[in-house]
Structures are given as structure tokens and as C-alpha cells.
Image (cartoon, rainbow, N blue to C red):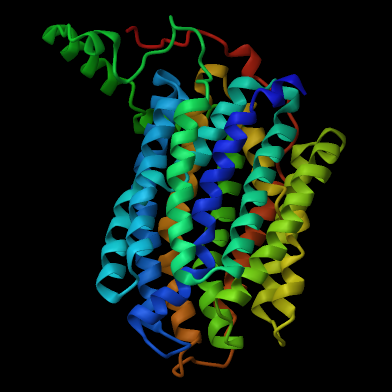
Length: 443
């Protein structure tokens, strides 16, 4: 428990950041619809615009995630966390000021630009931070607790949204995003504590005003040499069968999760006329069940069943709850399906724990960044497939009446991830054999 207590500032940082970002999710659908299609419950333009947003953000994240993870191995997790946590504030502040059409478009553009760097990077760096500080045998439980903190923030954020006006929601969200960045800079210690192997992005020479141009040029060249190439990524993918299987599971799992996230709220609004409050209630059920599972059940089950079995269980229930959404015949069915989060939240912490055991301690950022990059590639593919399907089957021109058809297809993608997870076999962790040379840049 001593190691986990040492992560308390990280947990608080992640809680505050996720609280800020989750708060706006129930409200953003209504804001988008009001800006693009006032007075309507179905809007193909809103669905396509949301899909385009996910597509561009996914392309940016696909490039940035491996780079961010690799740079964090060189400069430390805290330095790299500062950038996305600061950029997150900008689009939230715009909607906190006004939610008229012009301000919505400004938010939309800046959200795409900032999220290309921010989307997933905070969570990716937090996972690498945990891997730095927790022994291999306890990482599944630690990753589960981290996910439980995220779920707890999810609950608190959606609960706040349930009782706040739309304007107050975005104002509080922007304030909490600022608080999380300030808290992180003041209280979070860097996970690399040895000054000889960690280099701040702003080096000592620059701080003192003594800059040698030749030395600076050499450092820039060296820094770009540390950027992960395609060959590095392929070598990492081929490093073990388990790692490559985990990458496949990650792709199809993220493909389905992003497809569900992009489609579900518009589907429920068109099918059952849900609004911000119903969305918040639904997310509240999901968050409470997920929090209980990750903070109480997962630390008990992970050592007994192992990450591989828990991963398969999580993906099975993920697939099942998506299928229930797709065939919902009454307004209460989505609420019942949301309870399945008690089990499907196992999947992400388990896949991250499996990956962390396949690389050495000096490659944690690179590995987690690569897996996040695979997820970002799914973010690119998912809107191309599921956004047109959602718009088509929610419109009057659908080839047949099945409003949840796109969500059924999302569930089939999750089923592929489940089948692949059954093929992952427990293997002895090899990260302890890969201590090697960390090759951190000298100050």
C-alpha cells in the first residue's frame, strides 16, 4: 500500500482533470444540436460533424501518442503532462463564455486542434507514471485503481452536470481544468527522481542564460533521433506475440468504444427524446457501477483470475451491453444496459497491465504511447464507418427500420476484440529482463 499511497497526487490530478472533461459530455450534444439544428431531435449534420471531429483528432493522436510516450521516457512524465492539461482549458473556456453558433464553431476548431495533442495523452502518461512506481505483480490492481479514480471523476462530473445549468456546467468545467493543471505543477513529483537520468525540457543552461549554440544544435538533433520511427514501432509490435495480440484487441475495442460514444447520445435523443438530464443519469449509473468494480472488485479478482481472464470477461460484457442498446425497446433498457459497466470496465486496465509487462522499465512510455496510438488509429477508422451508418438509420431514408443498427455493428466489432482476447495466454513478465540502458539525455 505504501507504493499506492505514493501515487496520491497523481490520482488527485487525474480526478480533477477527468472531472473537468467529463462534465461537458452530457451537455455537448444539446449544445451542438442547438447550434446546428435548433428545435430538432434528429440532425444528420451534427452526427457528421461529430464524426469528422473524431476522425481528425484520431489522425493527430495517431501521430502524437507514440511521440509523447517516447519523449516522456526522456524528459519525465510531469513535463509532458503539463502541455495537454494546459491546452484542455482553451476550448472549455470558450463555451464557458458563450454557446452561440459562432462561439460553437470557434470551440469546434480549437477542440480539434488541441485534442490532437491532448486526447488520451493524459491517461497514457498517467499509466506510464504508475508503471514507473508499481512492481509488475501489482500493476493490474494499480491500473484498476487508476481507472476507478477516472470512474469516480466520471460519477462526480455527471452528477454535477445533472443539477447545473448548461452555462454553469461549462464554467465549472473550465475552472476545474485550470485547477488540475495548477495542482499537478505544484504537488506532483516526477516519477524519474534521479537528476542524472532526467532532463527537463528547459535545461539548466537555458535557465541560467548560458547557451552554447553548438551544444543546443546537438541536443536538438539528438532529441529528434529519439522520436519513434515506424521501424521502432514495428520492432515493438514484433517483440512478443502477447504484445501484438494486445494491439489487435486494443484496436477493435477502441473501434467499438469510439463508435458507441459518437453514436449513442444522438441515437437516444432521436429514439427516446433524451436530453442533458437523461444523459447525465445514464452516465451516472455507468460511472457508479464502474467505480465500485474498479476500486473494490478488480483489486480482489486480478490476483486470483489474472489479467487475461478479466480482459475476456470485460470485453464479453462490453459487447453484450452494446447489443442491448441497439435493440432497446423501451426507455428503461439503456439504463439496464449501463449496469453492465460493473464488468466491462475490466478491459482497459487489464490490457494496459498486460502491455506493461512486455517491455522494460525504460520503455514504458513508448509502449503505452504505442498502444494509445493504436487506439487513435481506431478513432480514425470508427467515424468513417459508424457515423454514416448512424445518420442513415436515424433518418427517414433508412433502407429498413432499425434505429440501433449502427450500434449493433459497434457490438460486432467488440465481439472481434473478445474473440482475440481468448487467444492471449499468460506468459512470464519479461520487463524485468529488459532493464538495459535507459539512455536518458544528458543535461
